[in-house]
Amino acid sequence: MSTAFDAAEFRKALGAFATGVTIITTKAADGSLIGLTANSFNSVSLNPPLVLWSLAETAASLPVFRAAEHWAVHVLASDQEELSGRFARRGIDKFAGLDIETGVGGVPLLKGCTARFECKNAFQYEGGDHIIFVGQVLNFSRSESAPLVFHGGKYAHATRREAPDAKPRSAALSGSFNEGFLGYLLGRSHFQFFGQIRAQLADQSLSDDDFYLLSTLTLRPLISTSELDAGLAAVLRQPSASRLPALAERGLVAQLAMTAESDVAEYRLTEAGRDTALRLISAAKAVELEILERMGAEDGAILKSLLKRFLGVVDPDASVLWDDPTQVAGKIPGSGWDS
Ligand SMILES: Cc1cc2nc3c(=O)[nH]c(=O)nc-3n(C[C@H](O)[C@H](O)[C@H](O)COP(=O)(O)O)c2cc1C
Image 1: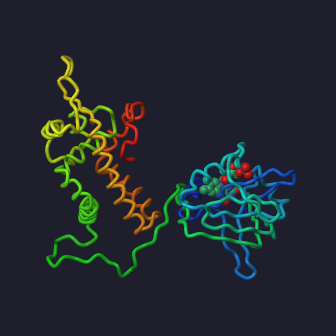
Image 2: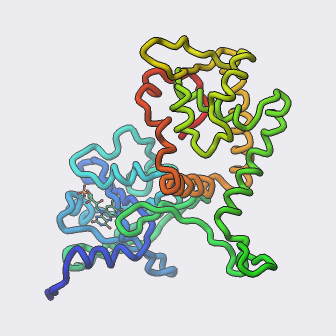
Image 3: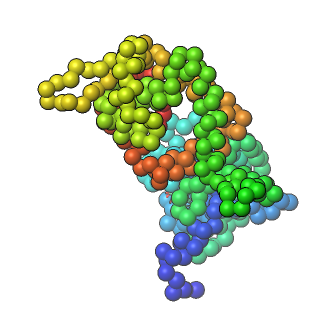
């Protein structure tokens, strides 16, 4: 049986089939713990309960799985990408430092997965350059955590889709935007999010711009007005130099003495400024937490991942302030945001 397929193209076409990611584990006769990442897992039969997966003939673990009486399948959760990478590598102690349980036949069981199936090694079939293992499920468990997904050779997210009838509604005026317009969704979300901390800003007679300036100043020990203006381009209503003197007058920021070599003003937070910034940021984080609790942390993580990609498209320079090496060297303790 041979084909004239382009191997890379064939692999790409197979990668169009989105799968979960599993780690299959077993215990060798000499007691060593064995495991590998596999996305060839599939259900076979409900009654009797059977599952399958296939193992490359070149895999180091092949002789052990061939001889094994039991093995376990772990369906990975979306936060277990690192574990997937670890079990796809050769020549390392894959179980080092992991908190392991012991299952049927002494098979090592990993924790924190979306689902787990303990199986008896029931049948083995030749399948070209792979061996197909069919297991009879003896025990299983599952959790509500979102699964890790593999698609097109990359890790991906799985999220619930809107119900089919949740189509965006249109404005009465034809040619206007509809409910699904991205600008509407982003804008409204932004105002709802920050609306909740605006009252606190007002209490302290601080504007939105003041908040953006104070919170950005937590990123580095010292920032120049030109860096602030570049980093907050399209965020600030006015150039930073027009607002910072007022914040300095209130003792929230301090301007570094200008030298003969540099005519750019540099600012840092004072202790009072740091306290104010951190209080506001913690109020904003509380808003985030409350929203994520309502929408679900898993979908929140997906939203963040998509927004990071979105920001990379519309504002590739947004990360400039985060990237600065001095941020790591001179990071302000307890500084407010995560990028
Ligand atoms: C997402 C993903 C899915 C994989 N699926 C399989 C699979 O189904 N079968 C397989 O033999 N190898 C698969 N691999 C590759 C193995 O994990 C990798 O070759 C591993 O080193 C084999 O371990 P071993 O050589 O220690 O037995 C996959 C790797 C990744 C990252």
